[in-house]
Every structure is written in structure tokens, then in C-alpha cells.
Length: 251
Image 1 (cartoon, rainbow, N blue to C red):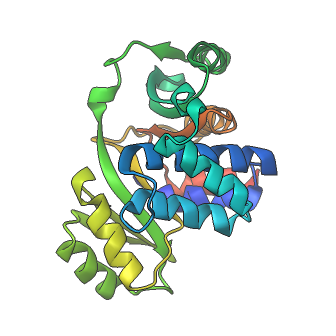
Image 2 (image 1 turned 30 degrees about the vertical axis):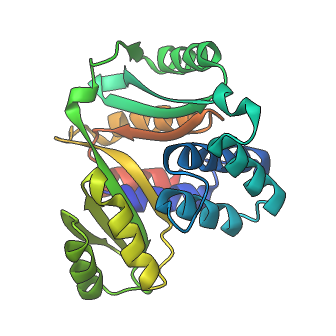
């Protein structure tokens, strides 16, 4: 997790991910579909859906698009079954372990695109189980510290069942078990905190330390993967040193 919020800030500033409005809407709609499929179509009782809808609204996604995505996920539209949620595993350059969460309507296309990007980077798409054991899936929330200070966030998070609360610059990060996702999300909503990110992330059990140039080559792979429409999240085990982040920001 080292340097994650700084990395996310750099990505937002550079606009490298979700460069096109259509790509943003595609990903947001798929997140809404999967959230509604998992927990039902009512945002009042489905915190994952509520957060996905809030994020969609913040990105100016039309109301009709949001409602259509909810209907697809809840089964009201017949084409909902065409979308599936998949996780792929791979090795990037320098032995970096990489996990990719995808939502796709064409598994074969997604696999072919992933394999092409990995091969181009000097890595390879791996078999199921080859990489996954190096990660734990966790509930993850991040938000600006100005919305809720560290002490208040710590108290709220621990009461809701979180494992850890981190302040990284101007960002507060809350990490907890998957089963605490709803409790933490509900607790933040009671404080009127809207997370910049609220998701189930794969977090590496141990981080891999690489030289700056090697770290940058891994991050280039991550950027390429994130630019795929089918990709919802990319996770890796490389430690993001301040030197590597500074070099990335200067590019």
C-alpha cells in the first residue's frame, strides 16, 4: 500500500486514466451493475451501490444512465447476465505480482487484450492461483483529511471494525476486512464524508522493493492495464518509493 494515495493523486493530475468521458461512464456503469447485482438495487440498503452512484453523480453521469445500470444489475433488464466480474493474475517486469479486477461482456476479448499488454511489457498473464496468494482482499476507503481529521477517522473506523487508519499527506485511508465494508461506509456517510475511493482492494502481503527505473517500468504496465475499458482495478506488490513517485511526477 506504500505510496498508493500519492500515486492516485499523480494519476488524477496527469489524467492518464479514464482520459475519455465515455471510458469513465463505461466503468462507472459496470461498477453500478455489479454493486446492484451483489446487494440489490436500493442504495439505501446497499452501501456499495450508494457509493457507486455517488461517484457516478460526481462525474456528471446522466441520471438515465445510472438508473439503467441499476436495472441491469438488479435483473430488471434481460441483458444483465451478459456482464461478469473476473479477476486475472500476472507477472509484470522484474517479477512484480499483478492482479486485475475486470467487468466484461466478452471474456475472450478481455483475456486477449490483457495478454497482449503483459507480453508487450515483458511480463506474462499467469494461471489462476499463481499470484493471488500474495494478496489479501480488503475494504478500502480514502478521502481528504479536511473532511474528517485523523483522530475522528481513527475512532470511527475502529468502531466500525477497520484494521488500520493511515494518513498519507492530505489523504486519510481506512483499511479493514471485507465484511466491514458496509459498516465503515455507513459510518462515513453519517459524518457526511464522501470517499474519493471506496472499494474492495487487493493488498499485497509483502511489498517488493525495486530500483526507481524498474518501478517506473512496472507503473507503465499498470497504466496500460488501467486504460482498458474492461478493467476496474489493478493491484501490485511493488513498493512506491518517494524517489519513484517524484520521477513519475516529473515525466
